[in-house]
Image (tube, rainbow over all chains, first blue to last red; front, side, top):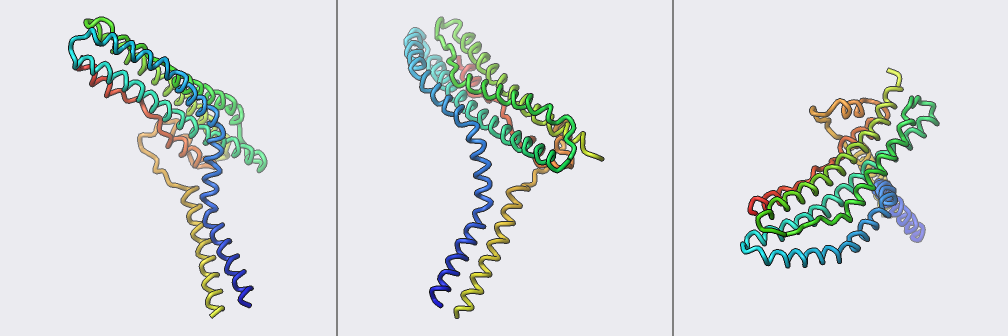
Length: 206
Length: 78
């Protein structure tokens, strides 16, 4: 009798623990799906960062050499900080934008599943399917732009003291323009995915 | 004594099931209050229908603008 009670206790505990972690498992499964699609890109970005490290170091050494010709210490330090900021912001934004690609792709994959379910259930989907490939292409393009940005080295030449500010300003503008392009490609990807929903909604009976 | 133990376990199991169901509801239907500043496109994808949740999730994705303020501050010192 005691043995039977123990078995019941054990089964009840396993059952209740299993049910409690069910929602977490579902969330993890979704995350895993996103991670799977992003894994190779994340690895590629890591590799690119490793690959550009020697070139970056070489540029920093060259810049330090050039900076010796600038008499004002505050200016020398400002250039060094700008260089460090560009690297730090670039890494931060690449990570953020890659995360955004994953989120957009997550919604996209769910939408494709929902379209399949709608087809099976006989629910009208209108021309929503026509927008699946453009959305996928837009996500791929956005991801490529993020990947490419991870390997960009900005030209920080601390040349002539007189034009130092202009040179740094130009580098800053080029860097910002590159990041803005990626942001726009992400917005395009999000709009392309939104179009699937818009077309699906249009097909629904009012 | 054994019966009490059994009843307790049944109660724990039932409560766990209820808790799991509540958590599932929270995870799947996390309420995102639509902002009045939504664009026409954003509003149309959040329209009531089978894909409303996907529309909300898509709108909730934040694409940050690159903040280069720290560079601009340094540029001023040059």
